[in-house]
Image (cartoon, rainbow, N blue to C red):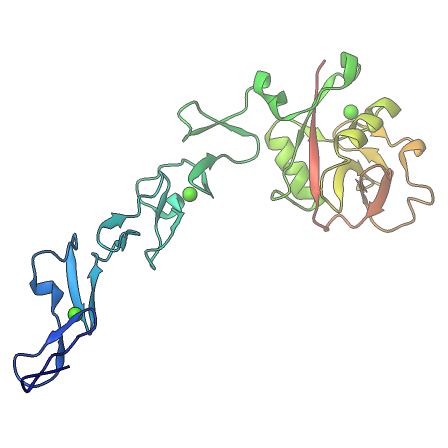
Length: 260
Ligand SMILES: [Ca+2]
Ligand SMILES: [Ca+2]
Ligand SMILES: [Ca+2]
């Protein structure tokens, strides 16, 4: 528009006519009082942006700043955009007496095999007899007067090691004395994930007998075709009965505590 020799400019949003010359220039909104940014304002060509502190993010209104608040047991990730699990086990103020297991959002103190966690959740004490069956399955009708302690998948040993761990807990390696007992163990372990489970069957003294019981291993418990000379110790694989195998192999195991 030509008005008496002056040309009127229509500047786009965010620009204003320059004080000299026929140009539009960027408005520095950050110098104005009404930019509305809660924290910091950064001017841009034709606009401006609000900027938050490092541990914050800009709210949807583009002006206010919000802080990530992580739930207990989580902390802000290095990128500042998500909450991630705190590994409490590497912190100095965790005082688990034995082992610390990190979990998502928390942690747990754990004890060695044959021990149980005190009520404080931190210290461990050896199982006393009344607690010994806590990790066990009882036979139906109490027909088997034993209880059993199952090693967990992360506690494995060779046959001698398994026997020693059981002995430290005043127990023997598992011994099948009746078909019902065998069926009971097969049932309670059918869903467990293991390759071999040591029993007390061994012929380290020359003939196959149950460790600690001075009792021969009845032929009915063997996998058909076994023993075939594969080794001096006996394991079970789920409900496949007993296989003979080298005692140096590593497996899970079950300790048995026999009541009189
Ligand atoms: Ca601007
Ligand atoms: Ca944790
Ligand atoms: Ca038994």
